[in-house]
Amino acid sequence: MRGRGLFFILIVPVLQVMAQKFEGLALTPPMGWNSWNTFETRIDEVLIKEMAEALIESGMQAAGYRYIVIDDGWESMERDSLGNLVPDPERFPGGMKALGDFLHEKGFKFGIHNCAGSTTCSGYPGGRGHEFQDARIYASWGVDYLKYDWCDHGTADAKETYKTMRDALYAAGRPVVFSLCEWGNNKPWEWGREVGHLWRTTGDVTDCYDCQEVYSMGWKYILASQVGLEKYAGPDGWNDPDMLEVGNPGLSLAESRAMFSLWSILAAPLMAGNDVRSMTDDIKTILTNKEVIAVDQDLLGKQGVQFMLQRGKEIWVKELSDGAWAVCFFNTGDDDLNLRINWSHVWILKGDYHIRDLWQKKDIGTTRKHFSATIPSHDVIMLKMIPLR
Ligand code: GLA
Image (cartoon, rainbow, N blue to C red; front, side, top):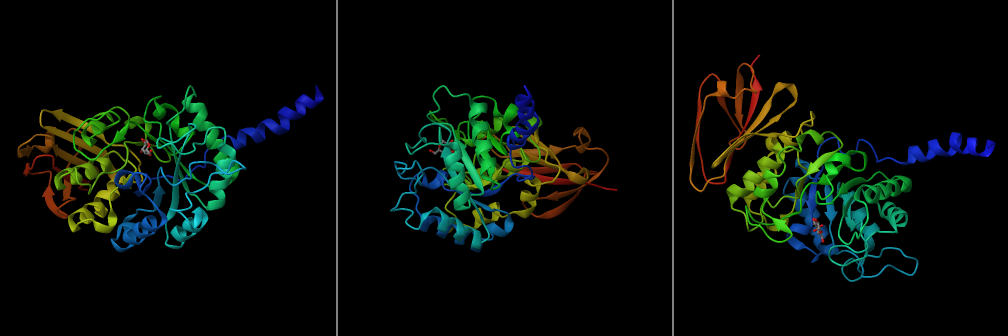
């Protein structure tokens, strides 16, 4: 009996301390670049290094994109004889430690992908049954961010499975942002905060505005399905409506600008998914708009809400610190939208505000006057409303 008592006094508190995520690693939504949306499994260390250089040269790193995440396709098809994960020797001949060191020297954080099931969605070794061993190897490589997928999970319970990896990461001792990529199947917004720092809310985004495929969809559908999830997001735990398609060929410039604006209103993680080496100046202007990024990264940490939904028109708003609001008018129709706003009808606003247009980067007056503008199809106007005191 005495032995049992000692167990509860000494061991149980230790186990409880171990069972946690690394707190405070994502007080604002993580920002970075991920290889999947453009390159899928066609990745190698040369590409990753070139992308790091391009992120620096383009000003994206300075704008806040810190995590470079190597998605599915970096592994060998088999673990080694000790059960360790091994990078593909032809595509990553320098190994992951050296690549991590390179990224760290360049001022980035190093992210990697694996899967909670037995194999990844592309058929590489998954983490199931190897969680503690894998977490130790990630720590030895200097990994700072783990995106953990949900293919081949069999009958596993989602929350318990992700908790096992959380505990493994914690036990390995290196702080790691834990990105749950469970596609929203088991309502991860209800339990994700204690397990990780962000959780996917849907299946995969693809490079289009509103197409629908078997396993993926255009960002317009993903946006619609975020309504109601806002209460679960906040500092250190974010809804993740998937990575950006900004700059990818299936979106018009307006659709790229709109996606970036609305993802910022959603306080979404901003993971660029384009080929940064060859992006146009227009796309660079979108991805590095510091005033829009500041909406996403606002320290109040509130996810924005859909304020109005009408045929052809949506209004999204996000509360910001210091009593300010971001307001995004989104033309979902096929033709130009002529907008006329009487600010006194926008009930969230109390008193008068100074208005800043975040894409024109200019001050455009106050709420004492009506606002009118024309928005092209699938484009947005994004404003910051600052209280006049
Ligand atoms: C899933 C994820 C994607 C990507 C692929 C890789 O589909 O949701 O984001 O990581 O796996 O195979």
